[in-house]
Each structure stands twice: as C-alpha cells, then as structure tokens.
Image (cartoon, rainbow, N blue to C red; front, side):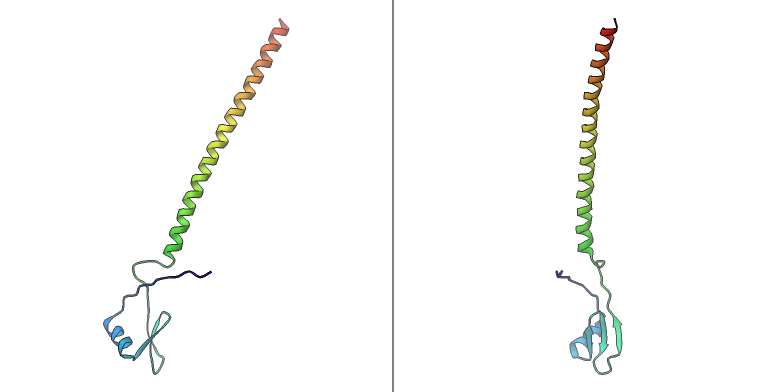
Length: 103
C-alpha cells in the first residue's frame, strides 16, 4: 500500500536560485552542489509534523473505540441490574413462600 504525502519546505532565496540555475540539486531531503556532490543544506518541513494525516485518522479511530467501550459498559451494567432485579424477586418470592409454610 502506498500513501501519497505532500511536504512543504521553506527555501532560502540563494537555494532557490541555485536550484533554478542548475548549480544545486535536491536529492531527497538534501540540497547539494551538482559538480562536487557536497551537501549544502538539509531540508526541514514547515507547518505540519510528519505523519500528521495518519495521527489525525488514528485519533478519530481511538475516539470511536472509546465511545463503543463506554456504550458496552453501559449495556453490561444495565444487564447486570436487570439480572439482579429478577434474582431478588425470586428470592423474595421464595422467602415469602417459606415464611407462609412456617406459620
């Protein structure tokens, strides 16, 4: 799977001039002289951290997962209360029947 990534760099005027006139070249994140291959500068992203899109998507998934977990807990609690209520009713009925039998 490939993920398209758009990266923005701020370049000094002299680097833009060198890239335009062919004395400098960009190789990945490096600006270097064409003839000597000497590294002139390393490029740094501006305005967004790396993988910002991936992190924002992951954060959305985590929010949905948290909401589902809370709903699951609510259903479990309600189910437990209903079961306990039914059990208590049976115990009361048995106790009432036992009390009548003893009298």
